[in-house]
Image 1 (tube, rainbow, N blue to C red):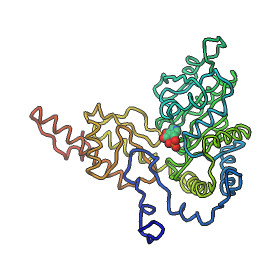
Image 2: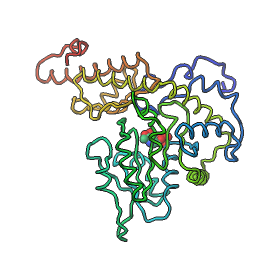
Image 3: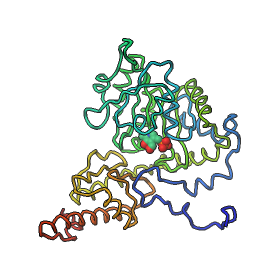
Image 4: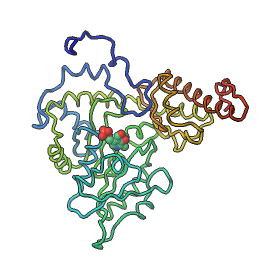
Length: 379
Ligand SMILES: Cc1ncc(COP(=O)(O)O)c(C=O)c1O
């Protein structure tokens, strides 16, 4: 049967496929409310600036972040690359960034190809986020012709789920401004950083940087895309590059209407706090199994030290699959489409894996391990 003639049934729209998926918050999927919005969207051509639905959300986000302009782009990667390209002018130059950041590790070398930039990856000395001292150690201020001077610093927040404190971002940005260096913030998960109690607002973070990108397809559950924000000129330039890269979208309203609902129903209704709370529960469950984490659980990521607990990664994923839970290595990502039931199941997976590795270890040494000890949280 073709999709066009399939009868409406209770399907994935009603049962989020990501409920038992802990690999990434990118697995969150659109909701029935997003689907229901479609009959009312503008079908205007966004390349011609005629998508009133898209224009309305761009204006709304610009206001929310208190930036002059916003632009819908196809992905977080595209957003970061357009910002890097638009903030830089004439090589030779370099971009100073965290050695673990997405722009450096996970964007297929795009900054070198699209912006002809050398990247300077800096290791955060506190193991969590870059400080001004790390920046000063790695920045290239010299105009000596041997070097590619730093013209841009990119920050990421959250980075590996850890919040880059606004106070530290302020120090870095003040230094950058003092040296004519631009700053871009990869805020793919800035929403999550702003969803902890007492957090700064989106606009407070945005005020510090020249440009930022925020994803709507991870954690918020929209099907596609990111927004970038900056000055009117910078965003106009980014739009030009976006078109050059084939990123012009005709009936973009179909996507941006869903993005609009994601922002309203998920971020503004506080649903990301649920993901952060799930992460705390998962951390506790893991510790009850005798596990350690390798990074603080500030938001929705829990980094479990499988190696220290003697768990091979393939066994971890295998037991998850046997019990109906999808795991992706030592990072557990929580999102609002998980549920109390899926968190409970995840704990059962942890208990089972730990039981198996400990039983194997004890069998080798002639002792036995009771499964009940795990259930009582005694190990
Ligand atoms: C911090 C960060 N920035 C950017 C991206 C890129 O987003 P996309 O997959 O939409 O290109 C990701 C993707 O996971 C990310 O984690």
